[in-house]
Length: 80
Length: 80
Image (cartoon, rainbow over all chains, first blue to last red; front, top):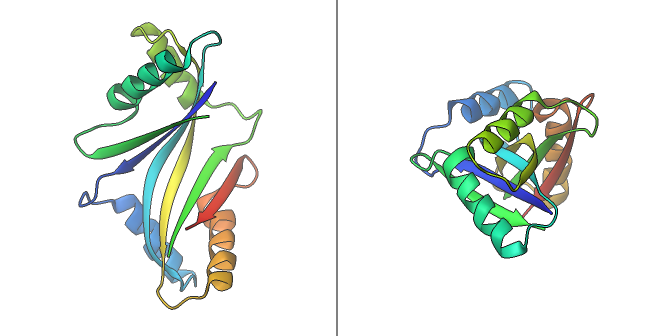
């Protein structure tokens, strides 16, 4: 079972890395790029034989406690 | 218009960062995590007044040339 976890900065948290990409894009001729925010993306393979409810609980806890910093980041989990 | 770009390592490319997360997960008690691969995620806001075809072309080129390293990474673009 594969879970996808998306971690993004909360609205209002400055993203200097994204801003740097945006400015670089402008300076090399990408006129259509108005804003860039960078996040993280994880593909987590779950052990075989784990049931869906248990997998969901474990990956939620993992995303909250390990993969993201809930003070400044939001996360979203997709299991598919 | 908002575009989402997902950048992941190609299959077969080693991902030491993902492996480190996976080992850490095991050692702190997450038994269900079999594998972790880390990628990047970008939210790109496109300038107003740009038409969809032009936006699609620009963001594809941007993802290919700037946001990813096509030698070792794949990317996927979603415009929504």
